[in-house]
Image (cartoon, rainbow, N blue to C red; front, side):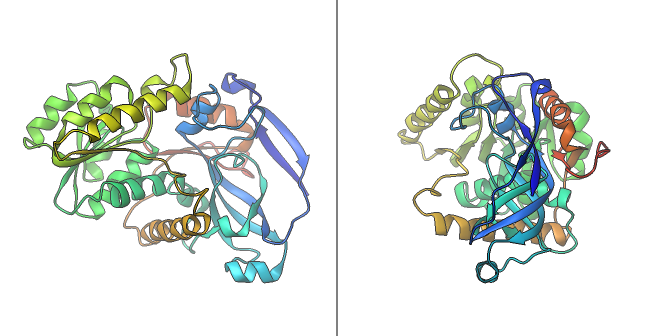
Length: 350
């Protein structure tokens, strides 16, 4: 069986991505062949093409942080039955790399069933983005109903899911975005703030005693403002460094500096907390528990989608051969939701 893949050959512009066709290996016990129906374009791929993602592999490699697809074959029926995965079933997976392809071979244990009534593109919007949002909100910050939070980049892939999860939990949300995204945020129940304005001052007007949590994907010097917006007992969750995306230098050093700053703040006796969220924390040491929690959390997100308690925020779709255009579009910003690559649909652009 052959697979068509998009290869990132090195530190290049999006237009230098390469299309490769290769023979897939024979399936082993505990593996499945998945026909990819949707994969996403996240901030991780934007950093990877610059060689700045914290633990990316050596070039060349196939990007693609997550995917949704249909199981075409399994290496062993008994193992598939044990994993409760069957041929013809739609599944999702976190991959970190490899998702920009039309077929992939994955471990059965890493597949999460997608319920009926949820399309591949819809499901794709809550795999890496939804898991990140769910865990930051409910496992890291542990925000309660009737509290107030600030979400930076509320129109983005993670942000647009995070604000919906928060509103569903009865949490008041202040979200930053460009003005053209404000109406859509209001429709999601969010109080929009123009990120070009003095955000801390505006937040103080809306929440004079500070907020319960700030979710910051920007990093850089602005993280100080995020810390200062917290009320007593509040939590800062940093989960990216978008402000330094186009700056030269080591991506690892950027993250390490940010983590060090958060550690210093945590040592202060002021009742506030700061965390750097790592989606992969614990996987290497506690693989079985990591997989069980992933299945449980993603199952909750799919259930919310199926019940229409949250809505999929698809910014635009692109065909697999349009991955360069998809990456360029994602890097330009100014949209709401997730950019999705749809293999098998040459005219996916919408």
